[in-house]
Length: 301
Ligand SMILES: Nc1ncnc2c1ncn2[C@@H]1O[C@H](COP(=O)(O)OP(=O)(O)O)[C@@H](O)[C@H]1O
Ligand SMILES: N[C@@H](CCOP(=O)(O)O)C(=O)O
Image 1 (spheres, rainbow, N blue to C red):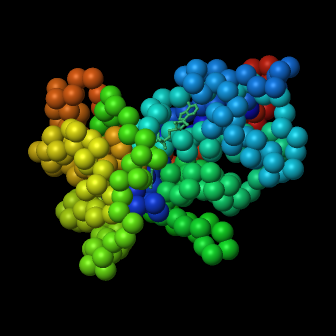
Image 2: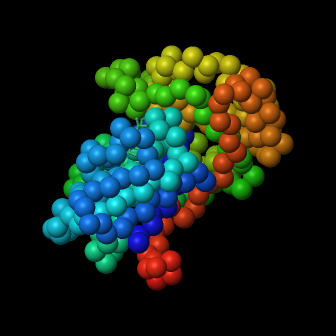
């Protein structure tokens, strides 16, 4: 059996639209086993238990890339990552399927190629890159379709709190509300803040994090899709947090200067939104992990 563990990701981190993403300590584990029948999928909503399942599509893409016949397979998805909440559930599926195909055929897909294939499927690299590599990543595909990635450290003092609403926002729909162009003035605003944000996260400078986390590319448009955005932001800021929309929402992520501030946000957000999941999260540094076992015995990781 092959088990693939993939972290959730918080894309954009406010000002890094479509290029910056953070792997967080919230996971899905997907198992792949040989099967007598073509495909069995368990552990996910019935609407996804068919050949259109994103994990299976990615597995097929990986096999095709390696020019191997797609094996009959049983897939079991054990997921903590909520669907369509801006924590990269689709990237988890894509990365799990591609990585499983690689492991199935002796790890023949390189990490760079995994990044290329995963980005092709997702359409943007900001979730799949940290899901594969872990940590805080900034990335793009160059003109030769090669991934260019830089990883930044995130200061240990910082804490992250995910405020996960009980309603979805589909990434596809949340991309439709964005304008097609932006002004030079807004581009300067964005580029300068994005560059400052990366270093501010590294050194843990909460003042600079707060000042630079002021997006003009997506957040003003998407805030309208999240009816509780203003209240969530007020709760975060009342306890010294800086909040941004995680990915395309609906989750909102608060960055806090210390644990006490994170605990206060958790307490106040739980009181205000009793039906939401409010979770403290750490940065995942490992990225995708695989394990191969036979009759319960781990053969290699
Ligand atoms: N456990 C799962 N099994 C199959 N497909 C899934 C699963 N989780 C997520 N998906 C796919 O990912 C899509 C959600 O992706 P998206 O709208 O980008 O939101 P997110 O922010 O969670 O990535 C679902 O519509 C579905 O196609
Ligand atoms: N850059 C993308 C990120 C989408 O992340 P998701 O977790 O919501 O799928 C975007 O903002 O559209």
